[in-house]
Image (cartoon, rainbow over the protein chains, first blue to last red):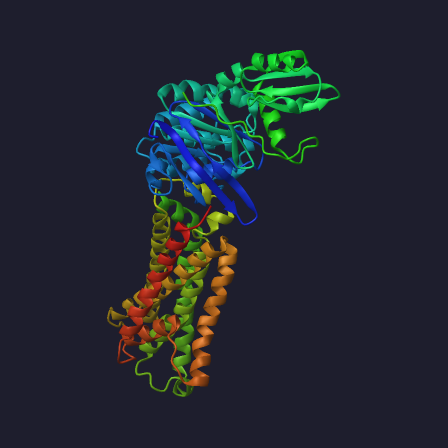
Length: 312
Length: 248
Protein backbone atom coordinates (compact mmCIF):
# COMPACT_ATOMS: atom_id res chain seq x y z
CA UNK A 1 0.00 0.00 0.00
CA UNK A 2 2.77 2.44 0.89
CA UNK A 3 4.19 2.35 -2.63
CA UNK A 4 0.94 3.84 -3.82
CA UNK A 5 0.43 7.58 -3.91
CA UNK A 6 -3.31 6.98 -3.63
CA UNK A 7 -5.01 3.78 -2.57
CA UNK A 8 -8.67 3.30 -1.84
CA UNK A 9 -10.75 0.25 -1.07
CA UNK A 10 -14.51 0.03 -1.55
CA UNK A 11 -14.86 3.77 -1.21
CA UNK A 12 -18.47 4.90 -1.12
CA UNK A 13 -19.95 8.36 -0.88
CA UNK A 14 -23.69 8.80 -0.84
CA UNK A 15 -25.65 12.01 -0.80
CA UNK A 16 -29.38 12.09 -0.11
CA UNK A 17 -30.24 11.87 -3.78
CA UNK A 18 -27.25 10.16 -5.35
CA UNK A 19 -24.55 7.56 -4.80
CA UNK A 20 -21.65 9.67 -6.05
CA UNK A 21 -18.88 7.13 -5.40
CA UNK A 22 -19.80 3.48 -5.46
CA UNK A 23 -17.21 1.02 -4.17
CA UNK A 24 -14.18 2.67 -5.72
CA UNK A 25 -10.85 0.82 -5.64
CA UNK A 26 -8.09 3.14 -6.77
CA UNK A 27 -4.41 2.27 -7.09
CA UNK A 28 -2.30 5.24 -8.12
CA UNK A 29 1.42 4.41 -8.18
CA UNK A 30 3.94 7.00 -7.04
CA UNK A 31 5.87 9.06 -9.56
CA UNK A 32 3.39 8.82 -12.41
CA UNK A 33 0.86 11.01 -14.14
CA UNK A 34 -2.50 9.39 -13.50
CA UNK A 35 -5.42 10.49 -15.65
CA UNK A 36 -8.68 10.15 -13.75
CA UNK A 37 -11.26 10.22 -16.49
CA UNK A 38 -15.01 10.34 -16.49
CA UNK A 39 -18.02 12.23 -17.63
CA UNK A 40 -19.52 15.15 -15.75
CA UNK A 41 -21.07 13.77 -12.58
CA UNK A 42 -19.19 10.48 -12.82
CA UNK A 43 -17.83 10.89 -9.29
CA UNK A 44 -14.39 12.35 -10.01
CA UNK A 45 -14.70 15.45 -7.87
CA UNK A 46 -16.44 13.56 -5.07
CA UNK A 47 -13.54 11.12 -4.98
CA UNK A 48 -11.03 13.94 -4.85
CA UNK A 49 -12.93 15.65 -2.05
CA UNK A 50 -12.77 12.46 -0.02
CA UNK A 51 -9.05 12.11 -0.65
CA UNK A 52 -8.47 15.66 0.57
CA UNK A 53 -10.71 15.37 3.61
CA UNK A 54 -13.25 17.84 2.26
CA UNK A 55 -15.89 15.12 2.41
CA UNK A 56 -16.15 12.07 4.61
CA UNK A 57 -16.61 8.68 2.96
CA UNK A 58 -19.85 6.87 3.72
CA UNK A 59 -18.01 3.56 3.52
CA UNK A 60 -14.58 2.29 2.66
CA UNK A 61 -11.14 3.61 3.39
CA UNK A 62 -7.87 4.49 1.76
CA UNK A 63 -4.53 6.21 2.01
CA UNK A 64 -2.87 9.18 0.36
CA UNK A 65 0.94 9.05 0.33
CA UNK A 66 0.65 6.31 2.94
CA UNK A 67 -1.43 8.38 5.36
CA UNK A 68 -4.95 7.18 6.13
CA UNK A 69 -7.69 9.37 4.77
CA UNK A 70 -9.57 11.27 7.45
CA UNK A 71 -7.25 10.30 10.29
CA UNK A 72 -4.03 12.04 9.27
CA UNK A 73 -5.48 14.72 7.07
CA UNK A 74 -3.01 17.46 7.99
CA UNK A 75 -0.09 15.20 7.02
CA UNK A 76 -1.81 14.53 3.68
CA UNK A 77 -2.50 18.21 3.05
CA UNK A 78 1.09 19.19 3.87
CA UNK A 79 2.28 16.98 1.02
CA UNK A 80 -0.54 17.49 -1.45
CA UNK A 81 -1.27 20.39 -3.76
CA UNK A 82 -4.78 20.75 -5.08
CA UNK A 83 -6.35 22.75 -7.87
CA UNK A 84 -10.10 22.68 -7.55
CA UNK A 85 -12.56 22.47 -10.39
CA UNK A 86 -14.13 25.81 -9.46
CA UNK A 87 -10.79 27.72 -9.35
CA UNK A 88 -12.30 30.06 -6.80
CA UNK A 89 -9.82 31.96 -4.66
CA UNK A 90 -10.20 35.19 -2.69
CA UNK A 91 -11.40 37.79 -5.15
CA UNK A 92 -10.13 40.73 -3.13
CA UNK A 93 -6.55 39.47 -3.09
CA UNK A 94 -4.00 39.80 -5.86
CA UNK A 95 -1.98 36.77 -6.96
CA UNK A 96 0.98 38.26 -5.08
CA UNK A 97 -1.13 38.43 -1.90
CA UNK A 98 -2.44 34.92 -2.51
CA UNK A 99 1.15 33.73 -2.70
CA UNK A 100 1.85 35.56 0.56
CA UNK A 101 -1.18 33.94 2.15
CA UNK A 102 -0.38 30.43 0.96
CA UNK A 103 3.38 30.45 1.48
CA UNK A 104 3.25 30.29 5.28
CA UNK A 105 1.40 26.99 5.35
CA UNK A 106 4.05 24.95 3.54
CA UNK A 107 7.59 24.28 4.76
CA UNK A 108 8.48 23.11 1.24
CA UNK A 109 7.26 26.30 -0.43
CA UNK A 110 9.53 27.64 -3.16
CA UNK A 111 9.67 31.37 -3.93
CA UNK A 112 11.97 30.49 -6.79
CA UNK A 113 9.17 28.41 -8.28
CA UNK A 114 6.79 31.35 -7.87
CA UNK A 115 9.13 33.61 -9.84
CA UNK A 116 9.74 30.98 -12.51
CA UNK A 117 6.14 29.92 -13.09
CA UNK A 118 4.62 33.37 -12.80
CA UNK A 119 6.89 34.44 -15.65
CA UNK A 120 6.41 31.28 -17.68
CA UNK A 121 2.64 31.40 -17.35
CA UNK A 122 2.56 35.20 -17.73
CA UNK A 123 0.45 35.85 -14.65
CA UNK A 124 -0.51 39.43 -13.78
CA UNK A 125 0.57 39.34 -10.14
CA UNK A 126 -0.86 42.67 -9.00
CA UNK A 127 -4.41 42.53 -10.28
CA UNK A 128 -7.23 41.43 -8.01
CA UNK A 129 -8.17 37.80 -8.53
CA UNK A 130 -11.81 38.74 -9.16
CA UNK A 131 -10.67 40.93 -12.09
CA UNK A 132 -8.72 38.17 -13.81
CA UNK A 133 -9.96 36.20 -16.80
CA UNK A 134 -10.88 32.53 -16.34
CA UNK A 135 -7.60 31.50 -17.93
CA UNK A 136 -5.55 33.71 -15.62
CA UNK A 137 -7.47 32.44 -12.60
CA UNK A 138 -6.57 28.91 -13.60
CA UNK A 139 -2.95 29.96 -13.97
CA UNK A 140 -2.90 31.43 -10.45
CA UNK A 141 -4.30 28.20 -9.05
CA UNK A 142 -1.66 26.23 -10.90
CA UNK A 143 1.08 28.61 -9.73
CA UNK A 144 0.10 28.09 -6.08
CA UNK A 145 -0.04 24.32 -6.55
CA UNK A 146 3.30 24.10 -8.37
CA UNK A 147 5.08 26.29 -5.81
CA UNK A 148 4.11 24.19 -2.80
CA UNK A 149 6.76 21.61 -3.47
CA UNK A 150 4.14 18.93 -2.89
CA UNK A 151 4.73 15.21 -3.39
CA UNK A 152 1.31 14.82 -4.95
CA UNK A 153 -0.56 17.21 -7.23
CA UNK A 154 -4.29 16.67 -7.48
CA UNK A 155 -5.64 18.69 -10.37
CA UNK A 156 -9.37 18.80 -11.00
CA UNK A 157 -10.00 19.94 -14.58
CA UNK A 158 -6.75 21.94 -14.64
CA UNK A 159 -7.02 23.05 -18.25
CA UNK A 160 -10.12 25.22 -17.76
CA UNK A 161 -9.75 28.43 -19.75
CA UNK A 162 -6.13 27.89 -20.74
CA UNK A 163 -5.19 28.79 -24.29
CA UNK A 164 -3.33 26.13 -26.29
CA UNK A 165 0.07 27.79 -25.78
CA UNK A 166 -0.24 27.99 -22.01
CA UNK A 167 -1.80 24.54 -21.84
CA UNK A 168 1.13 23.12 -23.75
CA UNK A 169 3.54 24.94 -21.44
CA UNK A 170 1.70 23.66 -18.40
CA UNK A 171 1.74 20.05 -19.57
CA UNK A 172 5.44 20.40 -20.27
CA UNK A 173 6.01 21.72 -16.73
CA UNK A 174 4.11 18.78 -15.28
CA UNK A 175 6.24 16.26 -17.11
CA UNK A 176 9.64 17.98 -16.91
CA UNK A 177 9.52 19.64 -13.49
CA UNK A 178 7.08 17.61 -11.46
CA UNK A 179 7.04 13.98 -12.53
CA UNK A 180 10.74 13.91 -13.36
CA UNK A 181 11.29 14.94 -9.75
CA UNK A 182 9.58 11.75 -8.56
CA UNK A 183 6.30 13.43 -7.72
CA UNK A 184 2.87 12.15 -8.58
CA UNK A 185 0.27 14.00 -10.63
CA UNK A 186 -3.37 12.99 -10.40
CA UNK A 187 -5.36 14.73 -13.12
CA UNK A 188 -9.11 14.56 -13.16
CA UNK A 189 -10.49 15.54 -16.51
CA UNK A 190 -12.78 14.83 -19.36
CA UNK A 191 -10.34 16.47 -21.79
CA UNK A 192 -9.02 13.16 -23.05
CA UNK A 193 -6.56 14.54 -25.56
CA UNK A 194 -4.72 16.55 -22.89
CA UNK A 195 -4.53 13.61 -20.52
CA UNK A 196 -3.47 11.26 -23.30
CA UNK A 197 -0.45 13.50 -24.00
CA UNK A 198 1.11 13.06 -20.59
CA UNK A 199 -0.60 10.29 -18.61
CA UNK A 200 1.23 7.11 -17.65
CA UNK A 201 -1.80 5.56 -16.03
CA UNK A 202 -5.48 5.95 -16.66
CA UNK A 203 -8.47 5.32 -14.44
CA UNK A 204 -11.91 5.53 -15.96
CA UNK A 205 -14.83 6.18 -13.65
CA UNK A 206 -18.54 6.22 -14.40
CA UNK A 207 -21.52 6.32 -12.05
CA UNK A 208 -19.03 6.26 -9.18
CA UNK A 209 -17.50 2.96 -10.28
CA UNK A 210 -14.08 2.34 -11.75
CA UNK A 211 -14.51 0.82 -15.18
CA UNK A 212 -10.87 0.60 -16.05
CA UNK A 213 -7.50 1.20 -14.45
CA UNK A 214 -4.34 0.45 -16.35
CA UNK A 215 -1.17 1.81 -17.88
CA UNK A 216 -1.97 3.94 -20.89
CA UNK A 217 0.59 2.06 -23.00
CA UNK A 218 -1.04 -1.25 -22.05
CA UNK A 219 -4.43 0.10 -22.95
CA UNK A 220 -3.25 1.31 -26.31
CA UNK A 221 -1.45 -1.92 -27.12
CA UNK A 222 -4.18 -4.24 -25.88
CA UNK A 223 -7.51 -2.65 -26.70
CA UNK A 224 -8.78 -3.34 -30.21
CA UNK A 225 -11.86 -2.87 -32.28
CA UNK A 226 -13.01 -6.08 -33.87
CA UNK A 227 -15.66 -5.74 -36.55
CA UNK A 228 -17.29 -8.94 -37.71
CA UNK A 229 -20.12 -9.97 -39.99
CA UNK A 230 -22.09 -13.00 -38.94
CA UNK A 231 -24.92 -14.45 -36.97
CA UNK A 232 -26.06 -13.89 -33.42
CA UNK A 233 -23.16 -12.26 -31.59
CA UNK A 234 -24.53 -13.10 -28.14
CA UNK A 235 -23.39 -16.68 -28.70
CA UNK A 236 -19.79 -15.57 -28.25
CA UNK A 237 -18.43 -16.10 -24.79
CA UNK A 238 -15.13 -14.26 -24.67
CA UNK A 239 -14.61 -12.58 -21.30
CA UNK A 240 -12.32 -9.89 -22.67
CA UNK A 241 -14.76 -8.80 -25.37
CA UNK A 242 -17.73 -6.53 -25.20
CA UNK A 243 -20.30 -5.97 -27.89
CA UNK A 244 -20.49 -2.26 -28.44
CA UNK A 245 -22.73 -1.84 -31.49
CA UNK A 246 -24.66 -3.88 -34.03
CA UNK A 247 -25.90 -2.73 -37.39
CA UNK A 248 -27.62 -5.31 -39.53
CA UNK A 249 -25.33 -8.29 -39.76
CA UNK A 250 -22.26 -6.31 -38.66
CA UNK A 251 -21.16 -6.33 -35.05
CA UNK A 252 -18.51 -4.17 -33.43
CA UNK A 253 -16.65 -5.44 -30.38
CA UNK A 254 -14.32 -3.78 -27.93
CA UNK A 255 -11.69 -6.35 -27.00
CA UNK A 256 -9.59 -5.71 -23.94
CA UNK A 257 -6.88 -8.20 -24.85
CA UNK A 258 -6.37 -11.12 -27.20
CA UNK A 259 -8.12 -9.58 -30.18
CA UNK A 260 -6.66 -12.18 -32.54
CA UNK A 261 -7.87 -15.08 -30.39
CA UNK A 262 -11.28 -13.51 -30.20
CA UNK A 263 -11.36 -13.02 -33.97
CA UNK A 264 -10.39 -16.66 -34.42
CA UNK A 265 -13.24 -17.72 -32.15
CA UNK A 266 -15.68 -15.62 -34.16
CA UNK A 267 -14.36 -17.17 -37.35
CA UNK A 268 -14.88 -20.64 -35.95
CA UNK A 269 -18.47 -19.67 -35.26
CA UNK A 270 -18.87 -18.75 -38.91
CA UNK A 271 -18.44 -15.01 -38.71
CA UNK A 272 -16.34 -13.07 -41.18
CA UNK A 273 -13.79 -10.71 -39.60
CA UNK A 274 -14.02 -7.37 -41.37
CA UNK A 275 -11.44 -5.43 -39.38
CA UNK A 276 -9.18 -5.46 -36.33
CA UNK A 277 -8.03 -1.92 -35.52
CA UNK A 278 -6.33 -0.11 -32.64
CA UNK A 279 -8.32 2.23 -30.43
CA UNK A 280 -7.60 5.72 -29.19
CA UNK A 281 -8.19 6.59 -25.56
CA UNK A 282 -11.18 8.63 -26.65
CA UNK A 283 -12.72 5.64 -28.41
CA UNK A 284 -12.13 3.39 -25.42
CA UNK A 285 -13.63 5.99 -23.12
CA UNK A 286 -16.70 6.47 -25.27
CA UNK A 287 -17.20 2.76 -25.80
CA UNK A 288 -16.98 1.91 -22.10
CA UNK A 289 -18.98 4.84 -20.86
CA UNK A 290 -21.73 4.49 -23.43
CA UNK A 291 -21.98 0.81 -22.67
CA UNK A 292 -22.47 1.77 -19.04
CA UNK A 293 -25.00 4.45 -19.73
CA UNK A 294 -28.54 3.06 -19.54
CA UNK A 295 -29.81 6.24 -21.17
CA UNK A 296 -27.92 5.62 -24.39
CA UNK A 297 -30.19 4.12 -27.07
CA UNK A 298 -29.24 0.56 -27.85
CA UNK A 299 -27.83 -0.17 -24.44
CA UNK A 300 -29.69 -2.49 -22.19
CA UNK A 301 -28.54 -0.68 -19.08
CA UNK A 302 -26.67 -3.63 -17.74
CA UNK A 303 -23.43 -3.11 -15.90
CA UNK A 304 -20.71 -4.48 -18.11
CA UNK A 305 -17.62 -3.20 -16.40
CA UNK A 306 -14.24 -4.21 -17.67
CA UNK A 307 -12.16 -5.37 -14.76
CA UNK A 308 -9.05 -3.42 -13.94
CA UNK A 309 -5.89 -4.72 -15.44
CA UNK A 310 -3.54 -6.04 -12.80
CA UNK A 311 -0.97 -3.55 -11.62
CA UNK A 312 2.52 -4.64 -12.42
CA UNK B 1 -1.34 33.94 7.62
CA UNK B 2 -5.00 33.33 8.24
CA UNK B 3 -4.95 36.02 10.91
CA UNK B 4 -3.59 38.43 8.31
CA UNK B 5 -6.31 37.41 5.89
CA UNK B 6 -9.03 37.86 8.54
CA UNK B 7 -7.68 41.29 9.39
CA UNK B 8 -7.44 42.21 5.72
CA UNK B 9 -11.04 41.20 5.12
CA UNK B 10 -12.42 43.09 8.10
CA UNK B 11 -10.11 46.07 8.36
CA UNK B 12 -12.49 48.43 6.53
CA UNK B 13 -15.30 47.67 8.97
CA UNK B 14 -12.94 47.72 11.96
CA UNK B 15 -11.54 51.13 11.07
CA UNK B 16 -15.04 52.47 10.40
CA UNK B 17 -16.26 51.25 13.75
CA UNK B 18 -13.06 52.30 15.47
CA UNK B 19 -14.05 55.82 14.48
CA UNK B 20 -17.82 55.46 14.78
CA UNK B 21 -18.11 53.91 18.25
CA UNK B 22 -16.02 56.55 20.06
CA UNK B 23 -17.91 59.28 18.17
CA UNK B 24 -21.24 57.72 19.20
CA UNK B 25 -20.04 57.46 22.81
CA UNK B 26 -18.79 61.05 22.90
CA UNK B 27 -22.08 62.21 21.37
CA UNK B 28 -24.15 60.40 23.99
CA UNK B 29 -21.84 61.67 26.72
CA UNK B 30 -22.54 65.20 25.60
CA UNK B 31 -26.30 64.57 25.44
CA UNK B 32 -26.33 62.86 28.82
CA UNK B 33 -24.43 65.66 30.52
CA UNK B 34 -27.06 68.06 29.21
CA UNK B 35 -29.73 65.75 30.58
CA UNK B 36 -28.10 65.64 34.00
CA UNK B 37 -27.82 69.40 34.15
CA UNK B 38 -31.61 69.44 34.12
CA UNK B 39 -32.03 68.42 37.76
CA UNK B 40 -35.78 67.92 37.50
CA UNK B 41 -35.33 65.30 34.81
CA UNK B 42 -32.41 63.75 36.63
CA UNK B 43 -34.46 63.39 39.81
CA UNK B 44 -37.27 61.82 37.85
CA UNK B 45 -35.23 59.30 35.87
CA UNK B 46 -32.10 58.75 37.96
CA UNK B 47 -32.80 59.78 41.55
CA UNK B 48 -30.26 57.39 43.12
CA UNK B 49 -27.28 58.44 41.06
CA UNK B 50 -24.64 59.87 43.31
CA UNK B 51 -22.27 61.41 40.83
CA UNK B 52 -22.95 62.87 37.45
CA UNK B 53 -19.80 61.41 35.91
CA UNK B 54 -20.60 57.96 37.22
CA UNK B 55 -24.08 58.26 35.82
CA UNK B 56 -22.62 59.31 32.51
CA UNK B 57 -20.20 56.42 32.48
CA UNK B 58 -22.88 53.91 33.35
CA UNK B 59 -25.32 55.26 30.82
CA UNK B 60 -23.00 55.89 27.91
CA UNK B 61 -20.71 52.89 28.30
CA UNK B 62 -22.95 50.47 30.14
CA UNK B 63 -26.00 51.02 27.96
CA UNK B 64 -25.25 52.77 24.65
CA UNK B 65 -21.80 51.31 24.04
CA UNK B 66 -23.01 47.85 25.13
CA UNK B 67 -25.84 47.87 22.64
CA UNK B 68 -23.70 49.23 19.82
CA UNK B 69 -20.97 46.71 20.62
CA UNK B 70 -23.44 43.86 20.35
CA UNK B 71 -24.60 45.11 16.96
CA UNK B 72 -21.00 45.62 15.85
CA UNK B 73 -20.07 42.11 16.95
CA UNK B 74 -23.07 40.75 15.07
CA UNK B 75 -22.02 42.37 11.80
CA UNK B 76 -18.37 41.45 12.24
CA UNK B 77 -19.32 37.83 12.83
CA UNK B 78 -21.29 37.77 9.60
CA UNK B 79 -18.08 38.04 7.57
CA UNK B 80 -16.40 35.15 9.38
CA UNK B 81 -15.62 31.55 8.42
CA UNK B 82 -19.13 30.56 7.32
CA UNK B 83 -19.00 33.15 4.55
CA UNK B 84 -16.21 31.10 2.95
CA UNK B 85 -18.86 28.52 2.00
CA UNK B 86 -21.02 31.14 0.33
CA UNK B 87 -18.04 32.60 -1.53
CA UNK B 88 -16.96 29.07 -2.48
CA UNK B 89 -13.49 29.70 -1.06
CA UNK B 90 -13.90 27.13 1.73
CA UNK B 91 -12.53 24.46 -0.61
CA UNK B 92 -9.37 26.50 -1.06
CA UNK B 93 -8.99 27.37 2.60
CA UNK B 94 -9.73 23.98 4.12
CA UNK B 95 -7.13 22.13 2.05
CA UNK B 96 -4.38 24.19 3.71
CA UNK B 97 -2.56 21.87 6.13
CA UNK B 98 -4.17 22.90 9.38
CA UNK B 99 -6.79 21.16 11.51
CA UNK B 100 -10.23 22.65 11.08
CA UNK B 101 -10.19 23.84 14.69
CA UNK B 102 -7.34 26.17 13.70
CA UNK B 103 -9.55 28.13 11.31
CA UNK B 104 -12.31 28.50 13.88
CA UNK B 105 -10.13 29.61 16.77
CA UNK B 106 -7.83 31.81 14.73
CA UNK B 107 -10.76 33.63 13.12
CA UNK B 108 -12.50 33.93 16.48
CA UNK B 109 -9.36 35.29 18.15
CA UNK B 110 -8.87 37.94 15.48
CA UNK B 111 -12.53 38.97 15.67
CA UNK B 112 -12.54 39.20 19.46
CA UNK B 113 -9.27 41.13 19.30
CA UNK B 114 -10.80 43.62 16.89
CA UNK B 115 -13.88 44.02 19.08
CA UNK B 116 -11.70 44.55 22.16
CA UNK B 117 -9.60 47.22 20.48
CA UNK B 118 -12.74 49.04 19.30
CA UNK B 119 -14.31 48.87 22.75
CA UNK B 120 -11.17 50.14 24.49
CA UNK B 121 -11.04 53.03 22.03
CA UNK B 122 -14.68 53.86 22.77
CA UNK B 123 -14.15 53.70 26.51
CA UNK B 124 -11.05 55.86 26.31
CA UNK B 125 -12.88 58.41 24.14
CA UNK B 126 -15.82 58.52 26.55
CA UNK B 127 -13.49 58.87 29.48
CA UNK B 128 -11.68 61.73 27.79
CA UNK B 129 -14.94 63.41 26.81
CA UNK B 130 -16.26 63.16 30.37
CA UNK B 131 -13.09 64.75 31.72
CA UNK B 132 -13.36 67.55 29.14
CA UNK B 133 -17.07 68.25 29.54
CA UNK B 134 -17.28 68.02 33.34
CA UNK B 135 -13.82 69.18 34.33
CA UNK B 136 -13.75 66.21 36.69
CA UNK B 137 -10.96 63.67 36.24
CA UNK B 138 -12.07 60.39 37.80
CA UNK B 139 -9.85 57.43 38.66
CA UNK B 140 -8.70 54.97 35.96
CA UNK B 141 -11.06 52.31 37.24
CA UNK B 142 -13.87 53.03 34.74
CA UNK B 143 -11.50 51.95 31.95
CA UNK B 144 -12.20 48.41 33.15
CA UNK B 145 -15.69 48.79 31.69
CA UNK B 146 -14.08 47.71 28.43
CA UNK B 147 -13.71 44.16 29.75
CA UNK B 148 -17.41 43.28 30.19
CA UNK B 149 -18.16 45.11 26.94
CA UNK B 150 -15.56 43.04 25.08
CA UNK B 151 -16.84 39.85 26.69
CA UNK B 152 -20.40 40.63 25.62
CA UNK B 153 -19.12 41.37 22.14
CA UNK B 154 -17.24 38.05 22.12
CA UNK B 155 -20.43 36.18 22.99
CA UNK B 156 -22.40 37.72 20.15
CA UNK B 157 -19.49 37.49 17.71
CA UNK B 158 -19.04 33.78 18.46
CA UNK B 159 -22.77 33.16 18.16
CA UNK B 160 -22.90 34.88 14.75
CA UNK B 161 -19.81 32.99 13.55
CA UNK B 162 -21.52 29.76 14.56
CA UNK B 163 -24.70 30.73 12.76
CA UNK B 164 -22.77 31.58 9.57
CA UNK B 165 -21.29 28.07 9.63
CA UNK B 166 -24.71 26.54 10.26
CA UNK B 167 -26.23 28.56 7.41
CA UNK B 168 -23.06 28.41 5.26
CA UNK B 169 -23.66 32.04 4.41
CA UNK B 170 -22.71 35.33 6.03
CA UNK B 171 -25.99 37.01 5.20
CA UNK B 172 -28.15 34.16 6.45
CA UNK B 173 -25.95 33.77 9.51
CA UNK B 174 -26.43 37.46 10.20
CA UNK B 175 -30.21 37.08 9.89
CA UNK B 176 -30.28 34.12 12.27
CA UNK B 177 -27.89 35.89 14.66
CA UNK B 178 -29.99 39.05 14.62
CA UNK B 179 -33.11 37.03 15.34
CA UNK B 180 -31.43 35.25 18.24
CA UNK B 181 -30.07 38.54 19.61
CA UNK B 182 -33.48 40.22 19.49
CA UNK B 183 -35.15 37.25 21.18
CA UNK B 184 -32.33 37.14 23.73
CA UNK B 185 -32.77 40.83 24.56
CA UNK B 186 -36.57 40.80 24.65
CA UNK B 187 -37.16 37.45 26.33
CA UNK B 188 -35.59 38.28 29.74
CA UNK B 189 -37.64 41.48 29.91
CA UNK B 190 -40.86 39.64 29.07
CA UNK B 191 -40.15 36.76 31.46
CA UNK B 192 -39.20 39.15 34.24
CA UNK B 193 -42.32 41.25 33.65
CA UNK B 194 -44.85 38.42 33.48
CA UNK B 195 -43.33 35.73 35.71
CA UNK B 196 -41.00 37.77 37.92
CA UNK B 197 -38.10 35.46 37.07
CA UNK B 198 -34.64 36.76 36.26
CA UNK B 199 -33.27 35.35 33.03
CA UNK B 200 -29.61 36.13 32.43
CA UNK B 201 -28.97 38.44 29.50
CA UNK B 202 -25.66 39.48 28.07
CA UNK B 203 -26.76 43.11 27.95
CA UNK B 204 -27.82 42.87 31.58
CA UNK B 205 -24.38 41.54 32.47
CA UNK B 206 -22.63 44.32 30.55
CA UNK B 207 -24.72 47.02 32.23
CA UNK B 208 -24.44 45.38 35.67
CA UNK B 209 -20.67 45.07 35.46
CA UNK B 210 -20.37 48.64 34.21
CA UNK B 211 -22.43 49.92 37.13
CA UNK B 212 -20.20 48.10 39.63
CA UNK B 213 -17.07 49.44 37.99
CA UNK B 214 -18.20 53.07 38.22
CA UNK B 215 -19.40 52.52 41.77
CA UNK B 216 -23.16 52.58 41.31
CA UNK B 217 -23.81 48.90 42.00
CA UNK B 218 -22.50 47.28 45.19
CA UNK B 219 -21.86 43.73 44.00
CA UNK B 220 -19.88 42.62 41.03
CA UNK B 221 -21.84 40.02 38.99
CA UNK B 222 -19.26 37.23 39.31
CA UNK B 223 -21.82 34.55 38.52
CA UNK B 224 -22.71 36.32 35.29
CA UNK B 225 -19.04 36.77 34.46
CA UNK B 226 -18.42 33.03 34.71
CA UNK B 227 -21.61 32.24 32.82
CA UNK B 228 -20.92 34.59 29.91
CA UNK B 229 -17.25 33.62 29.71
CA UNK B 230 -18.41 30.03 29.35
CA UNK B 231 -20.99 31.01 26.74
CA UNK B 232 -18.36 33.00 24.84
CA UNK B 233 -16.22 29.85 24.64
CA UNK B 234 -19.07 27.47 23.88
CA UNK B 235 -19.75 29.00 20.47
CA UNK B 236 -16.28 28.52 18.96
CA UNK B 237 -16.24 25.00 20.37
CA UNK B 238 -19.60 24.33 18.75
CA UNK B 239 -18.33 25.87 15.49
CA UNK B 240 -15.28 23.62 15.65
CA UNK B 241 -17.37 20.49 16.14
CA UNK B 242 -19.69 21.49 13.33
CA UNK B 243 -16.88 22.32 10.92
CA UNK B 244 -14.99 19.13 11.70
CA UNK B 245 -18.02 17.09 10.66
CA UNK B 246 -18.98 19.20 7.67
CA UNK B 247 -18.59 18.12 4.06
CA UNK B 248 -17.31 20.99 1.97
